[in-house]
Amino acid sequence: MLEVRVTKFGSPDVLQLFELPDPDPGPGEVCIAVRASGVNFADIMARMGLYPDSGKPPFVTGYECSGVIEKVGEGVDRFKVGDQVIGMRSFGCYANRVVTSANMVFSIPENMDHIKAAAFPVTYMTAWHSLVYVGNLHRGERILIKNAGGAMGVASVQIARLRGAEIFGAASPGKHEFLKELGVHHPIDYRADNWEEVVKEMTGGEGVEMIFDPVGGRSLKKSYKLLAHTGRLICYGVSSTARGKTRHLIPAMIEILGTPKFNPIKMMNRNRGVFGVHIGHLWHRYEIMQEEMLILVDLMEQGKLDPVIDTTFPLEKAAEAHIHVQERKNFGKVVLTSDL
Image 1: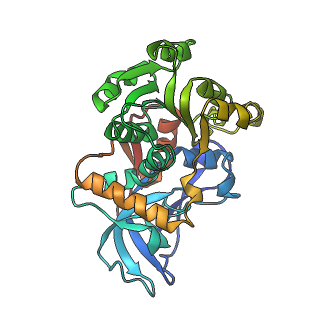
Image 2: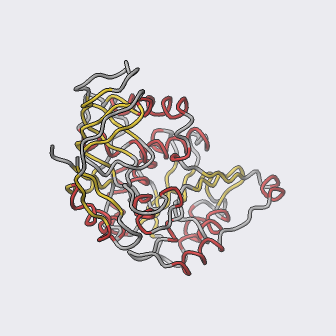
């Protein structure tokens, strides 16, 4: 098998390809011959040494993949060799063979290819869990989606559209036309100095009922101020700590220390809520993961959700994929492909 390892913390060139013996699944596991693996910003933060869950190098990043079941471990009866599946695990998917628990494997919808199948588990599950399970987004409510042009942004726009929300999407101006086509009612230039005032003015000074924020740090203070009464702030990342292609600890610490402290009494008085979401910390709650995944697969089969693929890179060019994402060039998902 081939796998891409983070050999040390640093710039994209620390991603190196290694060849190893093919793995065998243990009890309750399956081995997937991988056709495609999704690239997420968590992978980039792990490579830079800004993601505590990754541990120390060397390690293999990647939360999601799609492919064909090659081997089945003892006690697995839901799948058989040859099944086309989506697989998830807590890192390890930057490889052309992946062993994972059968509990975290799902059949690919008939109308979906391997590339789109690898593109949707992490982003759509995070967006669904945030907007629906946690945030309970209602029809007619206003939502501000930050980094709306990225993979997570696209997924959340599609789900917010299904929920009947009025969508504000923050992205660079070059992505605004794409966002309008996707269903964003109000594209916002997040680089403008007064973008918060623009949102306030567009909502008659009330603000929005939900904000989906991957930036973290000092950004959360601005987001919280934009919440209307009954507003919910969903925090699912700290991308503000990952500036440049290598780790810079002082700017990262400044962002972390700038994270606001929320006062429960003030939150009660304004009927506001702040929620944190980390899908990678829900692996042990199989029942939640499986329920949400089955809902999403059904919506995919109905054509109500459809992952937007920006670019694919061969597995051995994972470093180029990281550069593409870090430079904010992507609209939608970046995927690594494997040839067996």
